[in-house]
Image 1: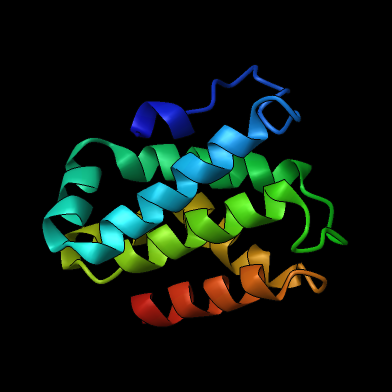
Image 2: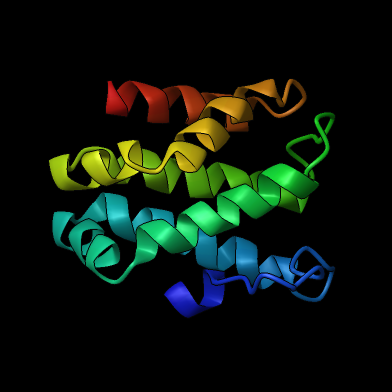
Length: 132
């Protein structure tokens, strides 16, 4: 699952029509897997999932236009990514790791700017509240 959401640094086509549906499904599955069972969330963290999610969110933050709506696949991927982070924020060890990654915290907070995608905003607010 983590391989499916891993994006290489030079990959500019990760949101292409051919690849984005699989990325969306994998990101959604990652979120649902983490929130349904504590052991899954802990395993995701131990498997370097936080770095993978951080990279995905960072890449999405740079390419997703501020006007993106919920209908755009990239918006839904970002929503699932942030929801996964919110779920992981329930674990003290993961929360500490998130706080020690300033870019990740910045990207989550920056997600509130997507006015046309209320699901991203909701996920970001929930994620921030989980870490408070």
